[in-house]
Image (cartoon, rainbow, N blue to C red):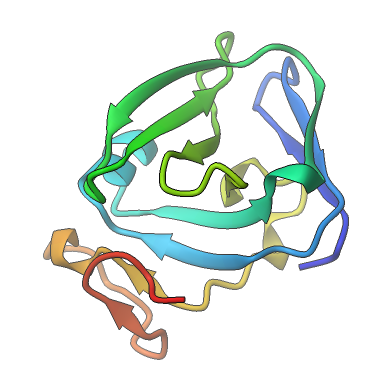
Length: 138
């Protein structure tokens, strides 16, 4: 990933930019991410909160207790419903951007699959990526 990138929702009402190096890139297969994405997993890019900023709009959010046991905030566009990013309760210093909301998602390169204990039997994961049953290790 480039050190500086941007993204937003499908309708353009919400935009963000990030000027820091990503902390990680992964595919999360937990049930919460399946529900949020409407698919088998969420492609997630972790970035330092200090490097992330909204540049347009005021997104909506909802809080839930995630499979990790922590409360997490899911942030989305209130106009078009696009999932944008998360604010994990376990890491208040971090924002987890949904790769599909990036202006150029082709730069996303996941390094692992996590929460595979919740993966669906029809989910065909990349066999070359490491598999982590629950939370990734530091």
